[in-house]
Length: 251
Image (cartoon, rainbow, N blue to C red):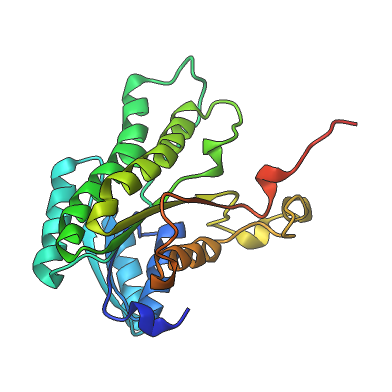
């Protein structure tokens, strides 16, 4: 990607304080974009902002809990008042909790769905209200390969990520006449903590020969939101090193 393609663009990344969100924010900042860091935890948002600015990028941390609709509205109002536009929204904020479906509380179910799915919808809707005035904009929702395959005790998280896939193509249809493009990415195993602690067996089970890292998802975001790729709309990219296509036989 040529950095000037994003120069001056206003990019909002939710859950930008760590992991995939932080790496996505840094990638856009390196491409000369103005990055807005929507993050729940102040110490994480402040640290990502500091790192971007130290590296010569432009970043603004806006404390945001995507479970709270009024905070999402406040986020978009802040961005509109300060920059006058929203070019790209990356809906990355997510919460995962695993446990027996026999014990999963209604409160935890609601917390996960309100963070991962409802939050993505509300952020998209409020950003789209600004994007439609420009007749342009790009939204990327971060889903998961768990939308397509599961392990036990992951019901709420899987439901939220499956919902994001459906939300993506529904929004793409609804927002198309306003010039807004909507796509999603389904990451597989993306190691966000200690990559060096991974075992050989962790890497070799991927056709790509390694576990993924946040930069793999950041690169996919840059690809989907690049002006040359406007024909991609309502699409979900699976970024998993081939894991979901692997046939497994028990000897």
